[in-house]
Length: 393
Length: 180
Image 1 (tube, rainbow over the protein chains, first blue to last red):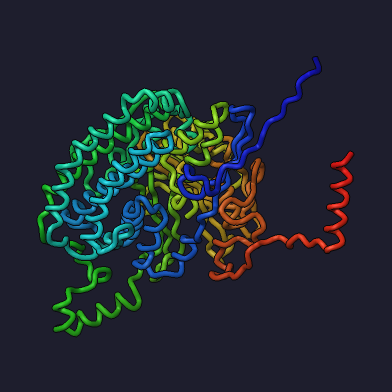
Image 2: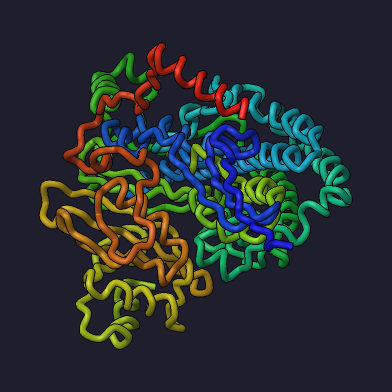
């Protein structure tokens, strides 16, 4: 019999494939079902946010950066606000820090819920999406309560918060925190011991701790490989050192380990939220007292000339930030969200750069899925929790 | 770890390189000469006192019209030493840098992005193509002398034009093929 001729097949996946979390395009080279090589193409969601930010005043950048990682909007704005405050040398009152911690952790819950729903859905557990979205709806309601905007509240501002907490905030948050732990158990009941889910995820897409460091995948991906690095523990900000919480880790480094780490992170975030909401008084100080950055209270604007002038200056010219540069990392839902800003001493940023965790995760994707099956690609993308808005900016 | 500590640890490992500490508000910042960049990065990664095994990001800032106009910035993280460092390299217009992809695998895409956005060439990079912008884009958008708003028509291909005679000829040819 004549020699059988074989050749690899090239398959295009995306940019509109439903399981690529936005518009990620992968060109797969296949030998049967086995992946020979992957070439990711990104940039479909590039909107030039960093360039646009250079034209805006410092405070106006907050809504822009929230639109980068649209599932963790307030992690972006928190990292940006902390970076600008570092250059300004501002120290926030304790209540502002606690509210920011609470908001950041609620944001982590909301982001992880979308990850959980889509990841499980792509593997075949479609109903998981509805379980997760239902809980996320409550978190979006809290966003709506504090800012009137469900996705991009822009509630965290340079110099503090936009305004004080609304009436009913504590009740909504407490109601959610009471309800949610039982829901985590429900999610786990559906997936953790699910035979189909485990066969699709165990031993798939292994990333070792060494590789995670080499590829810059600091965050849940590294923690699933045994690296206990968490910005909240290693470089505490917002007083995270005063909260009692653990950093969950696993050692296998596969898709299932990343699932377990993130599920445990949900529990730890609830724990932090409960401590934070207990510390926050229903009303109180909601911004720092620096008159350069924070506009004066309205009653003073109407009665005092100086306050009126200051109000006008802040809203027309903005504030200036001392020349220099700062990189501030925070622990976002996907790993280290960092903001690098450069100021030339004027009222507009010279350069704003976000450190996107999804960008690094997609970069590592070809090395992770090589030699695996085509169905594993979907599981691996889901487990790295990439968001293309974050990747492309 | 202060910039002076890092420079003291680096100087015996990278002999002859002129490091310079820079003022910063967050963590140590060190200016590195471009020609010794790869040696420096390898020393930062491997030396026991440093162990900067993680690449956080590579980016750049354009200080036009200052000369040299670009500063390429490397943010590194040492998990075991709980330390961060910022390396800065000065690059002029049309300047180039050696790639550090041999030191950290994760440097590949950030360097591509810097090339895409600023036009700084990384010598020895195996895949220096556009990353965020389309392949046929002109210019490097993050440069300060690049206009903020550029209007560029969508890239489309010429529609396939077939005259009626060609169309008939094609059908005839196919028919002939099928009958044989």
